Amino acid sequence: MTTFPDTFLWGTATAAYQIEGAATEDGRGPSIWDTFCHTPGLVANGDTGDVACDHYHRLEEDLDLLAGLGVGAYRFSISWPRVQPGGSGPVNERGLDFYHRLVDGLLARGIAPVATLYHWDLPQELEDAGGWPHRDTASRFAEYALLMGEALGDRVATWTTLNEPWCSAYLGYASGVHAPARTEPAAALAAVHHLNLGHGLAVRALRSVVDPTAGMSVTLNLHHVRGVSERDADAVRRTDALANRAFLGPMLEGAYPRDLIDDTAAVTDWSFVRDGDEAAACAPLDVLGVNYYNPVLVRQWDGVSPRETADGHADGTASPWIGCQDVEFVRQPGPYTEMGWNIDETGLTELLLRLRHDHPAVPLMITENGAAFADVPDADGGVRDERRVDYLRRHLSAVAEAMAAGADVRGYFVWSLMDNFEWAHGYAKRFGIVRVDRETMRRTWKDSAHWYRDVVATGKLPEA
Ligand code: FCB
Image (cartoon, rainbow, N blue to C red; front, side, top):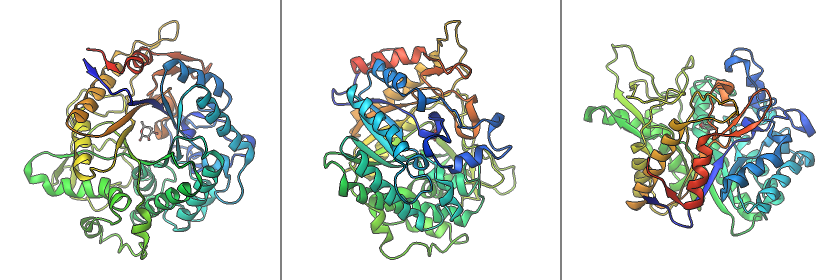
């Protein structure tokens, strides 16, 4: 039986826009996701995060859910437009009050708060001023980080600056399948840089005001890239540069990889990177957050046959893969989750060991892992979601395997605590271990929640 160390941190994860609702209450301003959702045709079924899981009004109930699961930590995100509606200026105290209650409520239940500052909900005013491709956004982000550090820095255990800047930059500004739905490759690379810069500035801002024992982190959706054959080594290298090293380089090493600059030379000269920026993006981290769902398989495109684009992200009119025109994303063998993502936990072990090899000094945390399935509830609202249990068990085994081989993994957060707003897919994709009835908002534990509670309680993975 697989056993995790006593110090291993078990948690669940959510994000503000996906669960809170209360989109116009208590002075909250609009974010790019409000705008995106209210633009016809962009989100499946016309869904929006206006109400989401109504978490804003059901905070106590949801805190009790966490307590019932017995988790040691909870990863949530702070809605920037709720606490600083236009993305600059003073704090909106009514919005901030919600996070005071959340953090205090977690601590009262013995649960460590893991706060993400940016899970994609940029204040619309900042997008109107240019968004992440605009340098000033990095400074605005650092100011916001400072405000949150001052307000919550005595109680938050771990701070995460950004969630998946890959998605913010490439899905938001290149393929346009996420907010703000722009399809401008050069702007997307400028966004990459200002996200990196904003991260570094935010870590420094936080460190200047928060409790010195608080941890600093960022969460990346690193892509574990494999080639179909050895002939595809260059396709792997290119994909890895754009997906992974574009962030790991500046954030952990203080430099962009040379090959990334060369691969994208036809799109931009990277002149938005000013002297000192790369050093500013690099700040010592206590932990690197890793989100993992599935690996990626690539092949050098022959330029003739129809090009496969099975990268797991919805097809937009444009590609998120800037400078990778000759790379094909090959459909991988199943089984698949409801997202169409293949289930392959070996990629997680390999990814963790690669990080151990490339960045041995940085401890790791799985900040998201989980699966969407078309759950069918029982009469009592419960769900026999054995496929989700199987997915979680496989991936936790994969984590244990990487740890046995030397990876320094400190914790694991299931995505997600509850069914929620899955971005452009709306509410159709259910990732929760707790079911949310869309009519009544009633929360009901799925079998996976019961299973996870036992894993958390024992620190052991039961056999299949
Ligand atoms: C990640 C996001 C998270 C959730 C999962 C399924 O990319 O960080 O908000 O949507 O995917």
